[in-house]
Image (cartoon, rainbow, N blue to C red; front, side):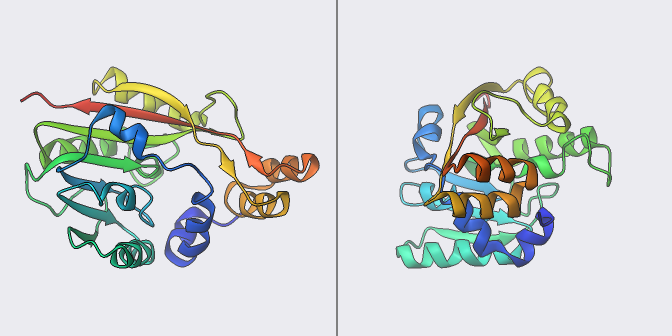
Length: 232
């Protein structure tokens, strides 16, 4: 299994292939907040999993990510779509280089967890989460919405999040006032061989060995959605 920060910098194309095996999430976002005609920011946009879904209906969308390689794939997808309402910006989450009150909707999919989990060694995760929340609130207009999506367990049929993320999830609800629900976003690979190879590469040997043993091409994935709408 490769280190994820290495993957995001140097193997973005294979990462994009893997996540393409999951369902599109636009309908889940729309249930919380319609994005038609809105100014949107996608924080930690990666290869455009959320950006490319939201862009066709959004008034404008900005994709932020620390990885230039990931943003290159996002840019290519958006260019191919013929849309002109987008731009990409290389940036982390702690200091968003956008004006205050510049978006109606901010989304962050499977990205904040890398700097606000309890195993993070670079700085206290609670401080990082507080700074992230400050930045998200700064860029969202009154009445705007923040939606965060994270894993609740890969290879799990019911929520079983990694232990190093549970405190972060608890603070989203208990300290920062987010509502929460969970959904299934199972991977549907072309065959068991592809499933084993991609899962071993990204998630490690234990799950991949189980897939190989059972010859699975469908891998269960639970995801959490947290959302908060700011007062007007």
